[in-house]
Length: 60
Image (cartoon, rainbow, N blue to C red; front, side, top):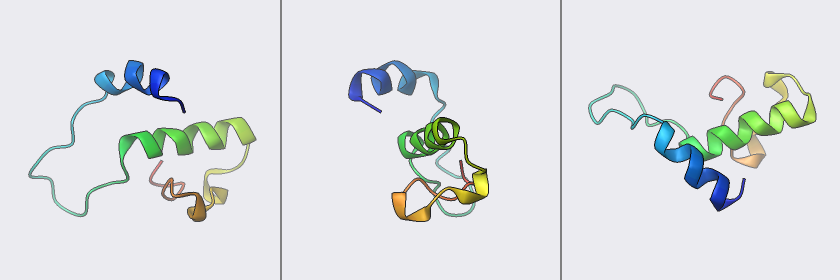
């Protein structure tokens, strides 16, 4: 995802709460890239490769 598209989408996303339990999630930009990867490649969520750094299919 290029920086121009991210500049349009980022303000629409809510900030992560400071006092939320558990580990911090994958950054929003990487998560969105993972979602786009799954949709573009027409693969199952469980097949999202962890090596790409987008998090797991359950994370996205």
